[in-house]
Amino acid sequence: MSVNIWIILAAAVLTYLTRAGGHLVLSRFERIHPRVEAGLDAVPAAVLTTLVAPAAASGGPAEIASLVVAAIAALRGGMLTVFLCGGATLIVLRQFFG
Image 1: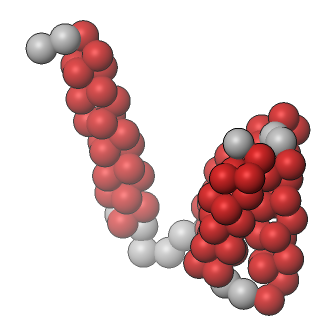
Image 2 (image 1 turned 180 degrees about the vertical axis):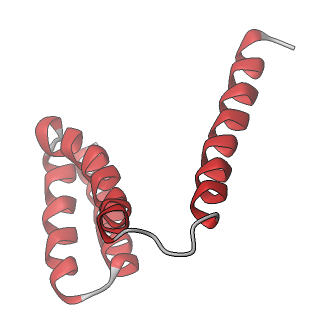
C-alpha cells in the first residue's frame, strides 16, 4: 500500500480514539461541572466558525451570498435549515459564478 493510504488509516484511527476517549472519560462522571458543560456546548459553534471564517475572508460572491442566506435562515430555523439553505445557495450560485 502507498504511504497516503497509511496516513489516511492512521488519521482515521486517531480520530476515532480521541472521540471514543472523550466519551469514555465523560461517562465516568455522574455529574459534569456547569463550566465544563458550557465549554462542551460551545464546541460546535467554534468548529463551525473555523469552517465559515475562511470562506467569509477570501470567498467570492457565491460564498458570501450563501453565508448571508444561512445567517438569515438561522434567525428563523434550526441547524438543518441553516445547512440546507446555505448549501443549496452555494451550489446554485457556484453554477453562475464558477
